[in-house]
Image: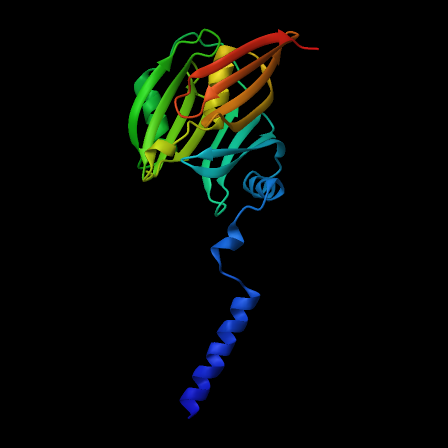
Length: 239
């Protein structure tokens, strides 16, 4: 009798605790922009949120949050269904170097391995951009892919990021992501400032609609969300 009574009291106590401390996965679900901002600001303490966009990644709704702190610009991607951080990256404002001798690829490789311990280096590539000569390093560790960029002359880490690369059962639903779409637009309009960047459906085709301004001109691009192909490109006077 005492054993049954003890078990009953234990069950009641556990129920009470569940009421006070809910453990449902729904409790972690991102309810909106404000919740996404809060998560990002907790991740990057002291940063200022500059933009929040919704997007679809591998068919799942995500929040892309851009922040600024000191000389770094951050981009974080959270999955809306459970609040999981799927992508984290930062970029440092580029500062030139007085050195003229390029650092060897082997030294850059060693620095990257030291930064991401126990990771496998996929490749080390020199980017010969005259304004920003860098080494781009791609590494893999577990289910994360890392992208690091180093100044080619002083070996300073100027970009760092990782992304969860879990496979999806329906690969046809995989989209390039808003960050990639903005990168494509920036290559088309170097130096442009974004005024709009969002996911949309155009006659059943998933696209990213992007608007930019530069030197008194307004640019509108429509990019295929799966292939990255620029489907539409318009230029007009910004009034």
